[in-house]
Length: 119
Image (cartoon, rainbow, N blue to C red; front, top):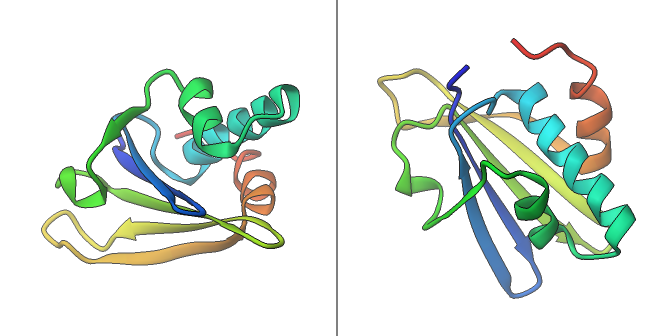
């Protein structure tokens, strides 16, 4: 399904935004994040490059606003106590307003949403 989304990852002074054309709904994003966390555990590398390496369909982009057709936006931030994600869904197709759907630790996001069957 072509549910487009952008994923903005902030770590210290680095920020990168990725666009993925498919599976941008919560359970699809949880799958992308799960693959990222798995690669981080195996490689010992930081989240930002692991997101790109673990998700072959991820394309580096200028920011959330660079793609006007996205249904979801994800903000991932490194905090002292770990990685946190905020998930936003477009209010409607004729609106530029995004409403928060979920916020919390990335591991909790994965455990809560990856179990759902992808639509």
